[in-house]
Image 1: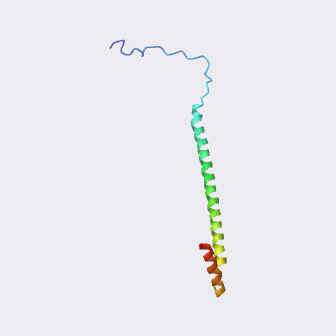
Image 2: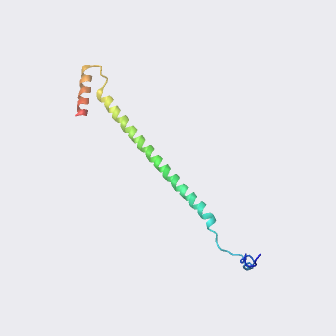
Length: 96
C-alpha cells in the first residue's frame, strides 16, 4: 500500500489542555427544560379553557332552567278556565 492512502491517519493527536475546561453545558438541560415549560403552559391553558367552558355551561343551564320555570309559572296549573286564559295570553305575548 501507498503511504499516501490514508494521509490523515498518521497525524499526531492535538495536545490536551493541562486544566479541565469549565465551559458550561446548557444543551443537556435546555431541551428538557423548554419541554417541561411548554407542557406546563399547555396544561395551564387546557385547565383554564375547560374551566371556562364548564362555567359557561353552568350559566347556560341556569338560564335555561330559569326560563323553563318562568314558562311553567306563566302557563299555570291549567285546572280552571282562568288558568288556561292566562297561559294563552302568556303564550301569545311570548310569540308576538
